[in-house]
Image (cartoon, rainbow, N blue to C red; front, side, top):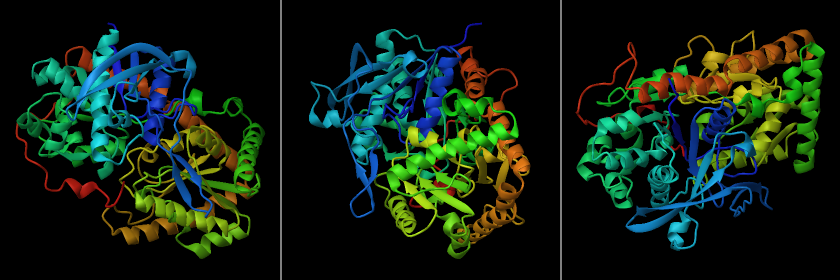
Amino acid sequence: MALPNVAYFSMEIAMDQSLATYSGGLGFLAGSHMQSAGYLQMPMVGITMLWSFGYYDQRIDGNGDVEVAYIRKHYDFLTDINVQTTVKVFGEDVIVKAYKVEPHLFGTCPVYLLTTDVEGNSEWAKKISHKLYDGDERIRVAQETVLGIGGVRILQAIGYPFDVIHMNEGHALPAAFELLRQFNGDLNKVKKKTVFTTHTPVAAGNEVHWVDTLLESGFFAGCSRERAVELGGESFSLTVAALRMSRIANAVSQLHGLVANKMWDWVQGRCPIRAITNAVNIHYWQDPKFAVAETDDELLNRKIEMKKELFQYIVDTQGKRFDPNVLTITWARRFADYKRAWLILKDSARIEKLLNENKVQLIFAGKFHPDDAIGKKVFNEILRYSYGMKNVVVLPGYELGLSAKLKKGSDIWLNTPLRPLEASGTSGMSANMNGALHFSTYDGWAVEGTFPGINGYTVEYPGLDDEIPWDERNLKDNQCIMNTLENEIIPTYYDNRQEWARLVRQAKRTSEAYFNSDRMVIEYFNRVYKPIAHGGIQAGEDEAVDTKSNKENPNLDAWTYSNIK
């Protein structure tokens, strides 16, 4: 039986440092998906946007604070396929042109990039594809309309016979509404072709817009207001509608599967939510020399070499000289408040003692959303702190290239989200592949893949409970981190080389064994794509809730964290 042809829609896909079509973890994950689909020669194409200015360029200004800058990108390696379509957005006919990323460029399946920044469009229409996740609501909604509706029409124009549309987050939901239009309102036909991945329980990842704004924008592809409200509510939730318009949905770790099913249990008429744990592309992320290292000496010596390469970058760009023989801890991810970049610094006296004694070195990196005042404030506070502290550095411009350097050159990969708000957190997987031990709160993929005493460390203690007040949890989590660091990690790193090498080896092995996106893509085909393409959920699988009620959940924000962008 032939595999179904899949079209993977994602607002961001990180394929290579040279192509600024991503912001962070969602894009990194999508890039690994495309790379493994290409490597395995699966029948899949990607659909994303060609952002003229990328997400943004992050740098430090003359006052020593972080600065958001936008620089237009010019690419000469994309294939102009001479295909375009028109999408009506806020009453305006907007030209959508497509370019192609050829598989040989980055080892992916074919990926099509959509842009409105073309001659013939108004200046406003051109701005739709200027900046990823634009803070202007009208442009943000327009971006989603172009991705979904424009993406479906471009695929049909080039003759790609998709059996399945995979909406990677709710951004591509207009694709389902375009199918609903083409199927003359038959939702069952839409469901046979549509699957959905939900990535986070936090508010910012589950967009809500007033239904009339979306109606005006063209988001619903001609669907009536009444039908749109039935699917997503007047305060229209993209996630809720996606769950009602898809045959199957999935969460991105086993814990997230439990959280997502509890969070969206109130949504009547929703599809089943399964759990498919995220993974990263081993062929892209793992250092080739580290991949073949076997003995203790080979593993640890290659690790020292990778640290030297990272530290050369640090001294070249920041003027701080780090020691490759000192335990190096990295926190690098999106600067959202719930991820708690500041947690290891909470007891300043305790961490500064270790820094001053040359027991640890700390590296921070990551981007915040340009409109996230809290994320920017936290970044600047840690940045200023680093100027006066020994063995601490903050690196701007956290993108694919820097991410790879950090994962190869770190000893500990620190992950401190407020449980259970981290759906997956894939960065630790690629860090493990390069011998950086994952040290994480018991959240996301760490529940499945970080095993204390075997391949890393987790923040666990008696009385750990998701319901305890955040201030108390912050205190207890910090104490657990510092106790583990002082009593387990530091003594092992400096005094027991053989045991440290064993931990490094097991981190490498577990990530190679299960957290490789080749496994993930095969699982998607077997558990999500194939059942849809071949006539519905297979025997024995769970069924969707069968009701047409559209009550709205009064506790929708119960799983969210305030002020997160």
